[in-house]
Image (tube, rainbow, N blue to C red; front, side, top):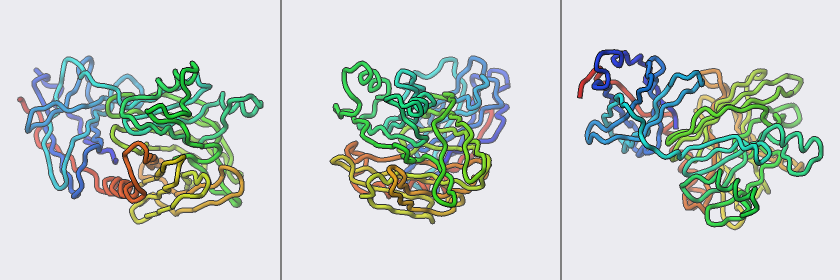
Length: 391
């Protein structure tokens, strides 16, 4: 969902005996829906954390809550503290943040990495879904007619149906010949075809005749892995659309408990972009709710069903296009976007697989997208109610 910021210097941490000092925050849910996996971001970039850690707890029960510090710009200084407060509908709760001398022992549910042993994929996952996209070696193999390459900037989906991490396990077994990740051995499988399509959330630029796209990414940076979020940066070679040279860099993140990855794209050379969902064999059902800021495609998929979707802030929406082509992998459902308030193109894209047990029908999937959109438009209200307080 939408990430929230407490834009305070939090200077109380610089006082003496700072390990005994806390900040107390109130978090309010104005919607009637329960907010269970919505990430709150607290700006800690002004703090000199040194070797200290921050912990989050419930002020009511004095229970520690899973949190994660992230260095977004990789300068060695932590920028944000993440946590996911569970706030029922129309309820507000109080939490504290304080120093700790040791990190919390937490599992890395949200994970991504570059995969050089499988050509040069970049793959990411959380407890619900997994994705990958493709690098320059895979592109070069296609261009040089070498078997095993992939040429696309589309986003591939790995259909997992277990909550534990599978990326490293699937790659290891597949490459060793022990088991193929194209076969479901109880954990899910890779049976999603991306090809030259946009997959789930790849971008394109509408031209006079069709859509132009970039090729594979040329560089990558892993920003964070942890219990709440994985994030990374991909850079693409300059590409052309209607005679305009386009530069593209994107930051992708995926939070715990969510089916949608967040895409924040820095793109120069155009005023609008389109993000797409592949229509595969064009056997599915399209739903679009532009008043809420989302599009959906629910299709039969290899004996089961698959829902794909894109959600953005309503102010970003510029239109929708069901683009049908006779060329293989070129039929996509496009959502055209304006730039966000921060100058980036921003949206969320992901999927729900019926066989995972998460969504049983098109209506359940569309309801998920609608609620996600509502939370994006009406974020949790966060306020400081006490500073420099001693427990």
